[in-house]
Length: 330
Picture: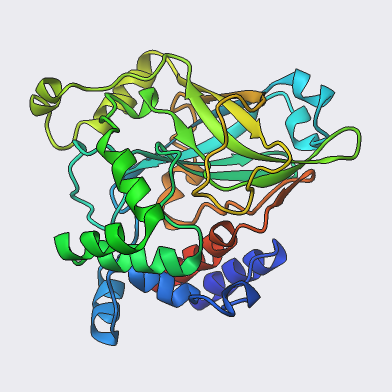
């Protein structure tokens, strides 16, 4: 990216309320540069420069495709979010695995879905994972987790012994079987947002995506018969025949629920509002937004009127860290 385009990108981020440099969010915690180093495994200047040369990034193995979002008209009976009054909104989607290895095996359990829903005047981005359990409640825990997991068994044991949230995450992942398709995975936005209600109240909630065709997992025997790279071809072949569809919900908090800690799960009994449906069909794959999807970032706090971020430190650290990573890849 030339200097003019880079400056324009940064200015856009600033105009949307995102700071590129370390903000007060990080005052007593880790800077965005430190967080990116922890994720990338680049703790010193030599490894950092080497990472820049190969354009090191998290979720390195992934691909982009496209579709549409169809809002649920009944949502307006509860929430005051004008963005969802549009009939159909274009989507750019990126499906990926976690980690910096672009050759990671698809046989692991982790699945990630990021979306850009670009309306007439506003946009809404999502960064989601197939695990509702998050491993860190603050930036220090996040930094420790990303640093220690790269140290192998010894580092993982340190996390188990010293960070209960990391142990809970590891315990959950052990029980999570690999899904047969990106299309048959549930996805969760582990962070909370604040939604404006018609009566003037502010309702905290979290996003979740439920596959219309259901969750389909693989047995070990089925998994052993698959190649290391089956997920991309499977989804792109599927959507030539029919769209992959998810119902998007907001799970609403009740008084007393922790909204600023993504490691705290809310009871399944909490009310859910149907926001609409995500349809991934590849219909816009030839458009520049899809073809250049890998070059940008998905900004989870780029929000339309009626939605605001919570005070969750993990949420508010995401976009500055994404921008730091983006700049290093140029």
